[in-house]
Length: 336
Ligand code: NAP
Image 1: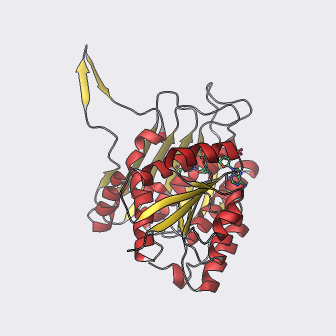
Image 2: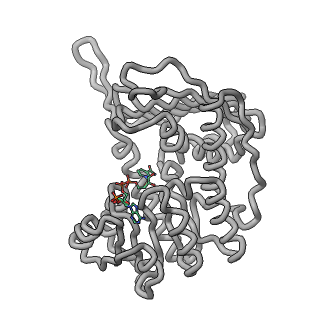
């Protein structure tokens, strides 16, 4: 089989991590090209893995030597690169967000509808997390009966000084938005964001934590605590209350240490530790989809719905109150 050549646009933290994961596997896909607005960063990555550097993302996408594109540059740049990849008939992995506006996401959905083909996998890596997959298996088995409530928490130990309350929604809560849609198969119809009193560990002029309430189309209510300054460590929890059972997301490490009248359990510091395997499985699943010639996983409609819901959350954060999400039916092309 002919090797599939991948070009990465964006060689920052996330780009380098995914390039390393692909480079470490002997495979029919091979990262061969990179581009970054920071030429030095692109060159450093290229030197590590013997890659060709392109001066711009546009040149990389247009190149005859690149068969598929991964967009891991900064969020604002995603829309243009993804649309260009589709126009060049090339499959594309795009880190979240698919685009920074719902209109931008819709342009990508429309480009795929016009082409009559799916090209895009969006980087919602939690769907590849084996613990979330186990949770979904139990929910799909209907052992718990209909889902009534979900309690979710997303706790970052700490964040940089420039992190804002808006980013708690767009960077953190967006993962709960996607995973709740995926776990339940239901759309979010309305959201409300409440601002509890802010932690002493919060950045200036921010509200950490935020508390979100999502109403799903079947009446399920989901509450989400998103805390960018949880201080004690990194943690993601999800407890699903069904008619017959309560089902919980398994935690990181079952090993506990009992000593000196205390019971201790390991907690990670960062999301990279908690979701290490998920990032690996996500990018390898994309590689597998390239082999099959069929895009799989979270698609551009999921990217669009995430933007619709984060917009509604931001509106509630700034203006208060319950906001309807103005959801759209999933087009046939995106029905799995
Ligand atoms: P980062 O370390 O800042 O890397 C982004 C890179 O893109 C930087 O080297 C930046 O250069 C470059 N860049 C900016 N504009 C560009 C353009 N027009 N063309 C080409 N390159 C450009 O950020 P990151 O943490 O890797 O995040 C990248 C993306 O991954 C973001 O969308 C983020 O939301 C996403 N992400 C997702 C997860 C997840 O859990 N799924 C986790 C982390 C990140 P300069 O530094 O010179 O601007």
